[in-house]
Amino acid sequence: MPDKPGALHRAAEIVKSYAGNIIRIQYDRRIDPATVFFEVAAEPESYSLMKRDLHALGYLQESLPTLGFLKLSVYPPHEPGSLFELLTYVTGGGGEHRYIDFDDRRPDPPGRVTISLNVEETAIVESLLDRLKSRYRLEILEYDTTGEKLDDTVFYVRFAQAVRG
Image (tube, rainbow, N blue to C red):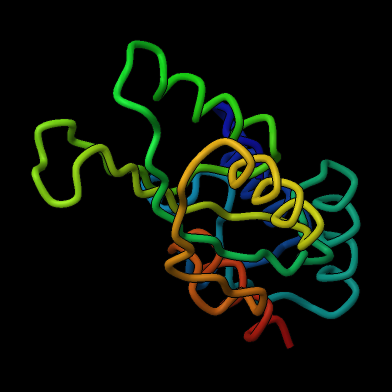
């Protein structure tokens, strides 16, 4: 569902227009502003029409890409602009930042930047790591291509896939 004022209301309007009854709704913008769960009671024909109309608006997610998760520590040089340059590499590499931890005052290990990323394709990970390892010392802390270790956003989407039937 688009993260725009009135989008949730529009979905409820479609359900109402086909005499559907919303039994349950779950939405937590803090976790994922684009995912809303509705449990609806309706006649089979009405349900099909609701689904058609919601799909036409782009409100239904029909597929779910398997996202990978990469967590690594990178040691950029201690100089002005080095963190900006590192983030430019990561952003340009196609990873979606989920977590960044850096404190230049930390004594052990000094200068370490820990980054967690969600990535859609393993080719992106390979390319990103090639770019980073040619420039920085790095440690790969975690790498998961199954989608099991992702944030709450993906948890909710996977949950929806599991209960869809």
